[in-house]
Length: 297
Image (cartoon, rainbow, N blue to C red; front, side, top):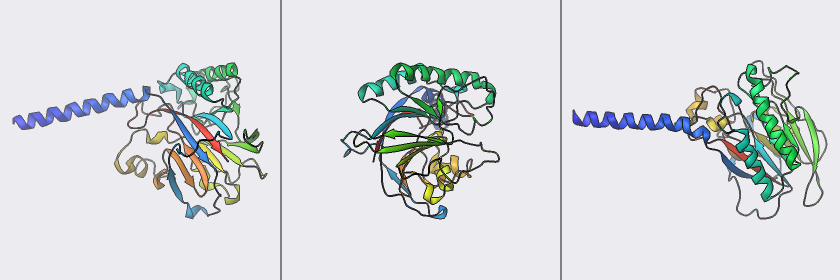
């Protein structure tokens, strides 16, 4: 009996520690760095998706990038212990090391539309910080944002939804397009076949759901892609059960692309863990993340 009591006490302690950590982890912000290098874009069809996991920052990249962005996603402001003040401090720190070309938000301001005031206030603080530093602040909408139709509230960022803008490489003056795609939500979802740019310049695509990649026409796939949506799994389980069972419709994560840097059919892709929590207010083995993204042509 004593052994049974001891085992029960140990299991109870482990469960308690697990629960406590799930509530603590959302408060821990990781300021990360991702290096995306251009490669030849593969024209494979959707049923021949090739995914290769890459290191976040290769040690061999010592030269200055063509462009440098600060990317964050999925604030879900109802439960986002990472305050806008902390995120602004991270932006200032990143900009102080090497100047940023832009701050980019990857979608999902809030989980529920009736909380949009809180989400817009959060992003307004980020906009103010960017204005003080002289950095443009761009963003796209996520699957939780498509129901937001009240014109009296604005998210604070310059919208990239189905638009594109031009940047200039710091190294050789090459024109680079930053394009964005809107998200139509998880119900009656519309997948776009083409990005909003038809030229020959290198393209960086900001899109909330990384699965958008496999629905693009093969000749419209970008050179680089920034996305979020998956929260890094938010609650890590063995064998990716959270995707195999709970989110079976998500294709790329069930093929191994959940968080980090990947080469997907020749496109360099970064998938962020995001900042906030979705429906459940906790995380496990998926720390909140904001990322400095270096683009190398």
